[in-house]
Image 1 (cartoon, rainbow, N blue to C red):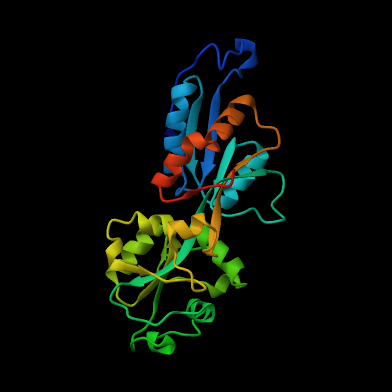
Image 2 (cartoon, helix red, strand yellow):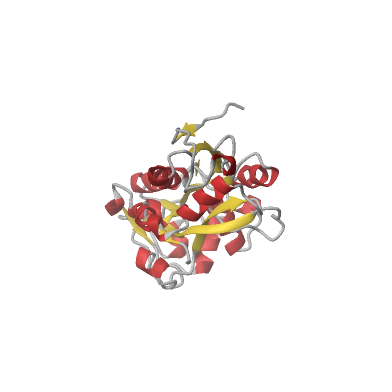
Length: 272
């Protein structure tokens, strides 16, 4: 499989933070593998990092979350990016929460439906309800739009609603949340699920209507104050003892110096 690598920073210095040359690894490169949705944010973070540490080069390779976990565990990646919490069985890597993102449901703005309970949403996702009239709306088929197999948001919803993998099959399955909201904006009968960050930064957000979950509006403020209940972490993965360069990148990304960049993308900085 061909590798798509984004080289963010390249320069080699003899010293790093006052350390002698002997204290700096021979090849001061850090390879970051994982979620396409997190790479633009991490690229901005490492660009700012480079202003302080121009001797460390950071490369990016997009992949699905499972590969990011496996490659980080095996030492093929220095930092993995995943858009969900680690499962109990996913051992051999350390998890560091960079940010939080709401998972939201949305419809086209012309779709006038009453508030949906969790049972309604589960029934729609599992095809128990196939027409909007089944949940108090108009008589037209429901089109489910969302990220497909291997995407973190789909995995979080399957766990949240205790579904089996085959039960959640969006049609069409879409690769990222921005495309989900574009599809919902273009289809009056669509129900989409995706990232709140992608929804609030969506150019045509006035064309979609985000639905409350458990009676709580899906807003950035409600994610920040922890009242909105459907939230996923954006996670950086490392091995137990990352090398000094990786630790520098990790510490910088998790510091308050990057909070403005995290918020620029519609995410909420992770816990201190």
